[in-house]
Amino acid sequence: MRKRFSITLLASVGMLFLLLPAARAGVQMYFTGGNSGSCGSVECGPYQLTTSAVGHNPPSDGITSWFFCDDYVDEIGQGSYWNAAVISGATGDLATTMMSERNGWTQAQANTAYDGKAWLEINMTNANRVQYNYAIWEIFNSSLIGTLPDESALIATAEASGAGDHVYVTVYSPTSLILGGPDQGGIPQEFDIVPDGGMTLMLLGGTLVGVATLRRKFRV
Image 1 (cartoon, helix red, strand yellow):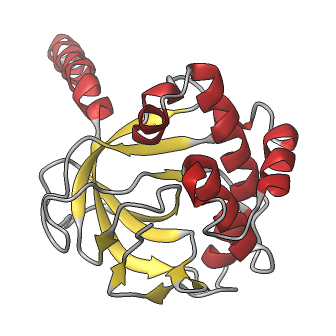
Image 2 (tube, rainbow, N blue to C red):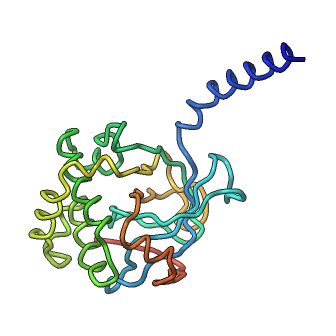
């Protein structure tokens, strides 16, 4: 009996190691439509999305969490879903994310950008969320400066104060076009999550309830 148990255990462990690369390959993102309120004519982050195994359309057994978005240009709608790579700022190369490649950043430049983003997200509150969301969008979409309120000073503070904070970021970088739902065939947005973000804790604690929206549409 012990021998049979050992063989079964070894087989299970072996199967786990075979499955690990596939598990790291990516997830499916599904936009539920929840957000933390309005930033003028657009919705502010964080936003509510569900992650699940690739191929669940829409996910029936996924995990719903609050995420932050750094892409002001592309658009998604409630029910949009797509595939994404999960890239850790602590162990991965942030220069390989969609937004880093779009900006042509080196790894050092990407780390600095995500330093600022992480600091803004960790310190975001209901009182500053509009300004902080604008700053995040401008870090990753520099052409917005002059279109949105200029948050250059805040960005400089965030990148300096948050030096090294990119290690706390987990980026969900699109690896496919939008596979279904609104804007099918379009480019999805990039999202990330940070541990114990101030705004996220408020949302989870019930201080601020996410508002369901039919569409997140951003154009410049």
